Length: 485
Length: 95
Image (cartoon, rainbow over all chains, first blue to last red; front, side):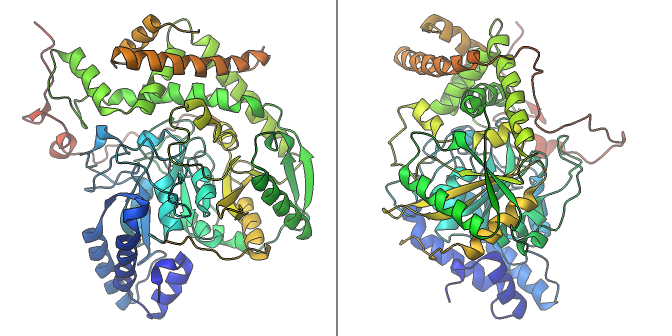
């Protein structure tokens, strides 16, 4: 049996029934990884030894009848999540040798639930990118077409799930970094509400936008991982105290009588015709399921990208000031004095995209420009959030394409930052407004590239996204395709 | 042009970064492209709109003032490039 192809819930049944052991599952997963990692390069670090030790421990627990929610399930972690005693690079030379002294809260929770970790996945450096090409460790390939990008910045997690190199994975999403690669790799990806999942131990990029979430092979697995990672954390001051429901309860309900908002600003010139056709088909599916589709307007949509590329770099320039070659991380070899040491360390330790964003952020926050850029952007951000507040008075959820195009070619946009930034045009708004968003596969282009559908809901309404995605998954006339590797 | 190379060099200094001349030219050009795009925001009337810094309502997250476990010295300095007697070593800053 090809255990590596199975979902979390399928593996759970086999492990519970005693049909397979956790050691079987992990062994099979590494055979798969060894076979395809050379062409996909989804991982920065494989934690093979620890994983087999965890599998043995899991098998002992299973023998005692002591199964927890994720006992024996092999998961991958984006290399932005701190793992105690395991190298965590954030895709950067700066943290090439960084070994965290503690686990991120999400890692701790998954461990407590019994999960096994296959390794740390590749990503754009400090999560800054939409293609995984800014990684210090080389790009990841899209499993559906190895000449194309997997999306970013959590491209390694998306590719690892799509290529069956883990049962599921965690990523982080600051402007679309879970949803866009999920769409481009044909898997389910969710960015929860800001505050829903603790960011403690997530290496910071833009703290008012960052959020951790799951990549899974189906909607049920997304609910299972949300159950494991959501909830208040006293170590994280923006962590919400809102009660966490059992997300699995939403998998059975349908969408009959629901109102789905279709924002006209997300169906614009420049969107790939095959993407648009797939999304229109999905709209028809939801109508067939008894939902009402309502044209709506989110009038400030066209300003999201400009707002994001002021706020995110501003926060990043401040967050990344900590990389000074003193406390941890890279330090340059030769320097004259302290200032020279700072400058050389940072200039040699960071790649071009990270430097570009630090420069932009420093500029927009500098004396004389703060009001024109940062304050203005924060005000427009208020208007963007108001658009959503008003929209959710009229509809239960909002439906859009996840990305305007399918996966583009490696190298296609690396010389033109503005073009690269435009690939996040449909995902950024959810981070600015703090609302949850989910991407689910909704078909393929004629070239066989996956297309993703984005669903958005109000604050803490992850359940609605899961309910809607689950209804779609069950009814959409979709063939079960796998990438040929 | 929103910014000249000279101004970009000053920003680089503030950010504790340095660039070769050709790199600086390319960066300045790319930053100008991006800053030009941001001018779009001037179309929006934001009179009387409060800046939004967090999308979810957050108040101060107070907790009881009790001592918890923290990192021990060895772990806290384990990743530092240069350490002596559990202290971070930096280049001399006072003559």
